[in-house]
Image (cartoon, rainbow, N blue to C red):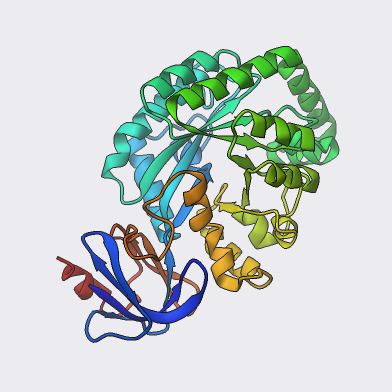
Length: 390
């Protein structure tokens, strides 16, 4: 099937042309219209977005406190939401966190069950779902659980995080206290006590934290699973994570950490909502600032996949390579970082994972291996054209 006379966002250029799909892959790309097929009519084709960090599955599973949805219901809702946002490969982030009661969300028992259920259910999805296990380095009990999940090939990416207030994402305690008060509907005085209690509960000897990090890194290397750092706030922390084998520095909170990560050979990932809005909600490094300094490698959905496309558009205005350069942040670069050699670019031979965007910047059509994952009905003739692919 031909998609004829579209604007094509290639890895290194934006051009007008046509693209042919055959057996789920991009078979040919030309620089001119071709007869027949689906007509572009002012639409743009991007390679499908690859989201290496999306927190949405936990919210879908528990949309209200203590209201638990079955995995098939939650995953189907998330699958549709991702496809409608142009995401064709998604790493669902699930967390092991210290201080959570057994069986509750983010406890090692609950999270391991979620990972196994997600692994089993993803075959029926439209989007290619992968599993990103977020490991809290203060949570000793989760090391053994993660070891078993890795041995059972249930996990595709592991990130190492420490959400203890006073460092990392929450290094600015006053901002964190204000946010806690607003989130929980309590006074700042009560929030201050809550934060102090959390800091005391999570306090761990540095030797134990390092031992946890080293053991998880060893397990990941043994099973060929990529490692990401999380919320690096100093150059020393970024360099330590690089030395342990991390390939991605997720959400560096200072420019110093981002620069050190890049210098050490890591790719930096920051949230699309941050880039779209022009600021971090927690007062940390702006994704636009990092991009302007050449220190941003990957855009992640974080908590809102619909932010990816407007974030790309926002960054394209100042990217040295324009739209092609900004689009690489959600396509070529995450594919390279995660070893996904079969996707991430409009190149002959790659998977036909495509996002078709209309003139109003709405996702009109999402294809995964040439099959329709989402269509909003506005691309005239799309249904009939795609039915003739075989």
